[in-house]
Length: 310
Image (tube, rainbow, N blue to C red; front, side, top):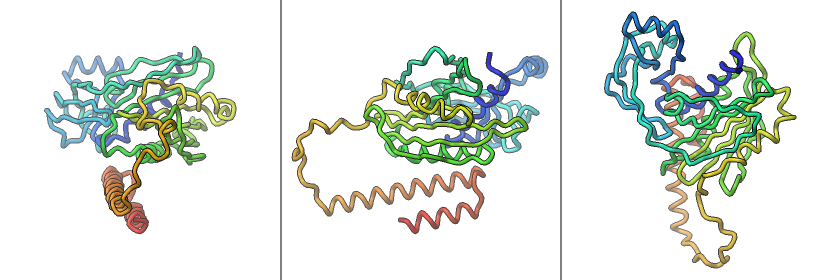
C-alpha cells in the first residue's frame, strides 16, 4: 500500500514531466475524490481539468507526446482549481494517436500503478514504486520525436523543472552517454521535496533519443539510499527495449566509403543549423518568461548570453 506521502511525491514528479509541455500552463489535473463526486451530482459540474478563463469549448490542445485533448464543457470557476491562473473547471475528451514502442522488464520489487487518461495524454507510460523501500520508484514518459526536436533541450527543460519542484535543488554529474547504441543525456537532481515533511531526494534522470520518440526515465530514491541504489537506478534506462536507434551503426562501414565533404557547403550547413538552434532556444526562453518560470531580468540576461555565444 503506497503511503500518502509517497502519493504526493509521485504526483509531484508527474506534474514535473507534464509541465515541460508547451501547453502545460493551460491545463491542470484535479485528482478524484468521493466528496467531489457527491458535489457534482448535486451541481451538475463535471470534469477533472482546470483551465485558463480564455479557453473555449471545442479547443483542441496537443501534448508533446502527440496525443490531443478537446474541451467538451466548461463548469465555471471552482474551489478545486486552486491556481489563480487556471480558475475554470473543464471536461475534456482525449484522443490517443501516439503509441510508444518502449518496453521494460520490471523487477519483482516494483509495482506498476494504473494510469489515468490525463497521464496517458501527457505521455506517461509507466509509474512504479518499490515495494521494499519507501520513496523509491520510476516514472517513464515518452514523446513524439519531430524534425525540430532537440533531446538535449528536452533534458535541460526537465532538469530546470525538477529543480523548481524542490527546495534547494541542484544538478550533479551531468553527462552525455550512449545506451544500447542510442544517444542519451543523464544527470542527477538533488534536493528536498517541498512542504513541512520534505524528504531529501535524488532523481536520476535519463533522456534517451530513439528514432521516432524521446524517452524520459526518472528513477528516484532518498538521498540516504542513493549510494546504495545508484547502480540499480542506472540500469533501469539500460533495460529499456523496443526503441529504434536514431542512426545505423558505422562499425562495419569502410573508412573511405563516403566522399570527402565540400568544405564550403559544410560551413553553410553548420551556420544554418546554428541559427536554427538559436531561434529555438530564444523561443523556449520567451515561453519560460510568458509562463512565469523566469522573471524579466533572467530573460534579458540569458538572451544576451545566447546572442553573445552565437
